[in-house]
Length: 102
Image 1 (tube, rainbow, N blue to C red):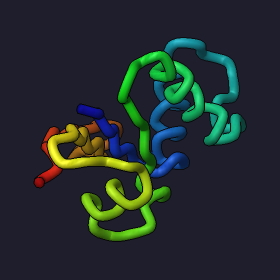
Image 2: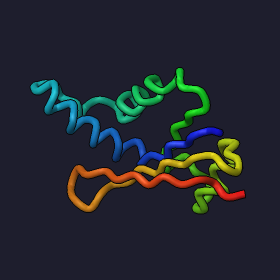
Image 3: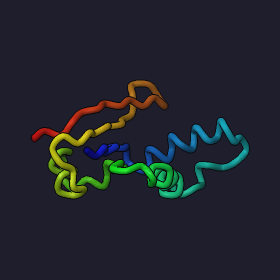
Image 4: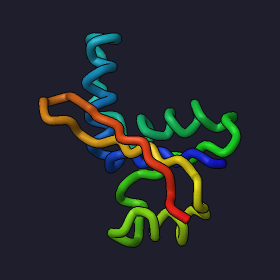
């Protein structure tokens, strides 16, 4: 079984990462870094994990997440989906885990 992380759009996620990095490495201008450069780090970090896929919301060609994951990314029944979204408070992120239906 595969695990698909459905992530927020790259620009949103890059903003969140830049905010975090400013607290860890103050004085550097993280906002000027291209969003793709920051979010690509996540892809590199999980590259060695078997059957783990990162999918950004803007990469889905269909509004129906299940259909889009199946058609565009090869997801199958029983695969895990971890959907990460912005939370209710600024800077907060939430995650919801579910399985693709048969």
